[in-house]
Length: 198
Length: 135
Figure 1 (tube, helix red, strand yellow):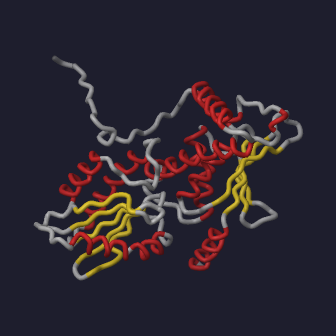
Figure 2 (cartoon, chains in turn red, cyan; figure 1 turned 30 degrees about the vertical axis):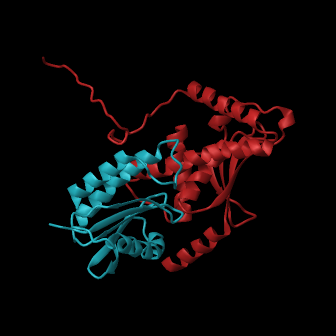
Figure 3 (cartoon, helix red, strand yellow; figure 1 turned 120 degrees about the vertical axis):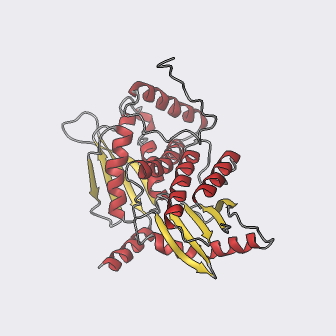
C-alpha cells in the first residue's frame, strides 16, 4: 500500500539518534515542575543554606550534561580552553538554549581579579516565585548558579557560583546577579596559558 | 588484517569508567595488563596537551614499540584513549566521534552519575561493533 508510515521501534536509547532538541518547552510546565522541586526540598531541610545547596546540586547535574551536549550539538566539537571563552559560552550559548535569550550582561568584578558576574533582569526560574520576608536572602536562582557551576567545573574551571538579588531604582523587582568566583588554580593556570601565547 | 587495539574511557577524575579490548588479533594473557599500563602512562601527556588546543581529536600522542596511543578529549574532559597498531587516522577519528555520541546518550540519563562506571551491556555491544567497523 502506498503511504503506509511505519514507526521504527527503537529497543534502546543508544540506538535512537541524538535529537536536535525542542526549540520551545511549555513555561507553565516548567514553572510547576520547578515549584515542586523547591517545595520538595523545603520539606527535607532545616535551614536556608541547606536548601540553597540542594538546589545548586540539582543544577550542577544539569550543567555537566548541558556542557557536553551543547559542545557536541552547537559548537561542532570544539572545546573551550580559555577563561573568557568558557564565560562567553555560558553567557550566550547556554543561556540561549536554556532560557531562549542571551544573558543581559557579563561583567568582570572590580574589587577582585577572580570575580565575574552574569546579570539578568528577570531570571526565568524566579519569575513566578516570591520570597517571604522570613527567608532573608534566599534566592531560587541558586538552581541556575548550580547549572553555571556544573558547566565551569566540567570544563576544568572550578569556581564558587552564587545568586544574589541586586535592587535597581525604578524597578519594583530586583535584578538577579550570578556571581562567579574562580578557584585560585584557574587564575594561575590562566595567566600561564596567556604567557604561553604571548 | 589482525590488529591489536585497547580502548578505555577515563573520566575527568582520572578514573577509568569503561575499558574494552577491541582488536581482532589473538590475545596473549599478559597483553591486556600491558595495554592498560601503557594507556595509564599516557594520561599525563594528555593532561598537558588537552589545554593547548581546542580541538577534540588529539591524534597520536605517545608510542610504545610499534603501538600508538591516540586520544580524543570531550568538552567535559572525559578522555577516550585507543592503543592500536594501525595507521588509519580517519577511521580512528570516526570511531571516536561515534563513541562520543554514544557517551553523550549515556550521560544524558539523569540516573547516571557522571564519572561512574558505564555498565550498560548494550553500550559495550555497540562499541565493539563500531570497533569492528572502523578499525
